[in-house]
Image (cartoon, rainbow, N blue to C red; front, side, top):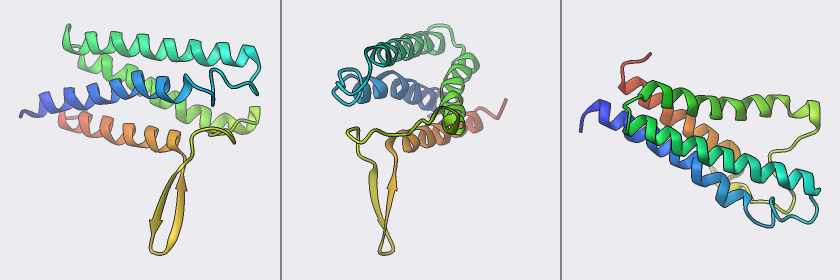
Length: 141
């Protein structure tokens, strides 16, 4: 398999993660139908998921239909970057990575210690690694 094809497959994987991950995580009682959330907050999360999925579908077309690797890469990088920007800005709006009744963090046991890793943070870091590998395979920018 060529490096170019592998880079496209990695970017496609991240794009599919962006398309499907929030749907699975957010269209349920922890978010979109959470009775503890205000109706307006639920509206915004559904809008966000539809936007993510639509842009991701367009990205897959741009990558495979038009051969626009770097544009697709940029769209994914903007999505991932906006996650990290929001993470940094959380203290300004009293945000949180997870809800009490939300998806539980990953629990890893390392050397007799338990490490809890938020699923959102894990996903964003994994996507960052995959995107970085894809860019490296393409020979950088």
